[in-house]
Amino acid sequence: MKLESTITGSQRTFDSIREVLAKANEEKSGDELADIGASSAAERVAAKDTLSRISLATLRENPVVPYEDDEVTRVIQEAVDDAIYDEISDWTVADLREFLVDEQTTEEDIDRIRPGLTSEMIAAVAKIMSNMDLIQASSKMVITARCNNTIGSAGSLSFRLQPNDPTDDVENIRYSICEGLSYGVGDAVIGINPVEDNADNTKRLLEMTKEFIDEWDIPTQNCVLSHLTTQIKAVKNGAPADLLFQSLAGTEAGNESFGIDVDLLDDAYEFGKEHCTGSGPNFMYFETGQGSELSSDAHAGIDQVTLEARCYGLAKRYDPFIVNTVVGFIGPEYLYDGKQVIRAGLEDVFMGKLTGISMGIDACYTNHIQADQNDIENLAVLLTAAGSNYFISVPMGDDTMLNYQSNSYHDASALWDIFNVRPAPEFAKWLEAMGITDNGRLTEKAGDPTVFLNNNQ
Image (cartoon, rainbow, N blue to C red):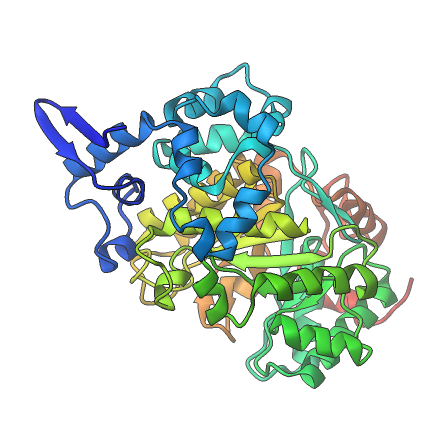
């Protein structure tokens, strides 16, 4: 087909599917840095118009990185159910959008076509959707997963408790865990970003968190976010890990910059099923974020939304318990301001859920980006409406180790109250038994970490 658009008498022609995808993207500083974004609003509209008329078959036949050159492409393409694909291959991207936002379309309807979609199709439809479209479609999709509790069920909203410390001090981390739990957060995971990425330190932190979880009989999971190979070494040395973590990229070259490939991920998945201490069946935790491939010079001329969708296509292979986009963490080179961060967060959760994975977000920003806490709170409200499975939360919204801003422990109760949602069911029952909540609302114990300083159960 001809890749061209004529709007108000002005014709624009595009050289490739990759170019149309890039120029149809909402404005992102990362695409501008890579010199692949639209040069004007008019060109962006023309690219969206062109993209809307491209068939899903054309997108499958033209992956942004050729099948023979990239193992992420191979994972995505080989996962397609050809029978379902054949039913929808003649749809245009506009047809897919209309299907997703139609009031009559249900989660069951969406779930049926998921196996026929590729990541390029998912990225393409996101590009022609408004923010409200993304929220509406996302809100229909219910994706659950289970490790030691069940995340993503209808009417629930979970939080990762992130008790980082700039020196990996075990007691400081323990006190932060106590504070977070007293606000009712931690059902997604108690996950620590370590300063020192080595097996001994990883084991030390895993042992502390597991002992705490067991002492208080908390229905949650632990994870230390060191490199995947470090975690595996720690577990082989006896460390108790409920989940295995790894950052992902949307190209083979991007994953090489993270020190991983599909073979390693495959091996880790099998290792986790045998050796992780969680109940399962979901043992993997992945993080992504628009712009990571550009930061490692592994973007291959592809826009950051399409690359992000490909991360989710790779993640799906491993049936993860949780995946989250760290949406504003990398910096203004990739997402310049609050508007771009909000758009990226809505795109990412939508694309993750349409892919069929348990999707959440770190709604965050760094100090040198043109954003503030109101932007992040706006995004949290919008994504709760969209049905994000979980958010990351840190003490007072300020991570003192990673030096960035995110949602705070105490933001959770506001979102639960506004939307009348609750933590994961098993965790919600535990909060009630602990007296931290009463009929789903926080009690006077909220925010008091001394609840956990002595075990008086």
